[in-house]
Length: 267
Image (cartoon, rainbow, N blue to C red):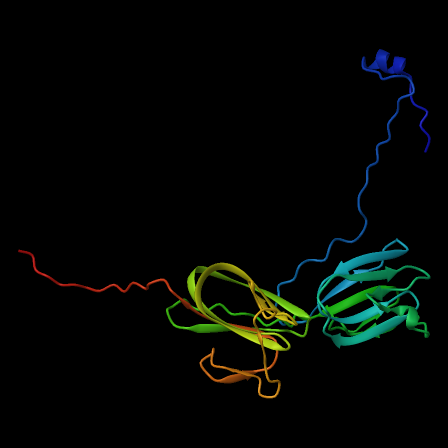
């Protein structure tokens, strides 16, 4: 595109606000053509799927963060991957155009040698025929749902397990002063913390280094016996633990006021 400019005099006679001779401008009106971003799904234990379609670009790049079962197809080759636990983090997904290969992270159609004209898949729950590049991710969250408990003055506990990842992250929020006791285990060591009072939100990590706020198994922790595990009664029963977990035993400290009726006489 060339810019020949315009006469400043012309602008002056027509508008009264012409610029210097030879001035010009380029205005670009544009709109993104990539498909809209995938919508956030409510976390539960049901299977879902996301379809990443081909676009007019030579290769279309997507990113996601989840756990998966896969169908990866270019225009010539296809791969199906059985369900597996995906390490949490950013995953690059490429959906190829003519002559290219589709991929999910390091899983690519470039290892396939038998081309297709069309193929059937039931990864979405319904058998569908495909004849062009696409990546379909079927996934289910494996993190357990932590249930809210009714507030009273009795001791309760919540167990935060590791889900097979290097570290599984949680957070807990006590909205009023609460008495807390802790048992924290990683892959090798444990630490028990006597009851203390706390309030607010706290980060918890469970894995090769387990933590509750600033309390960590990297400091002042004890190696446990892998056969018997570390015996603890934090839940009310004596149990041996030999895998990463953080157990929080807690009791609300706010006084519970009970209304009492008092009878008297007027004089």
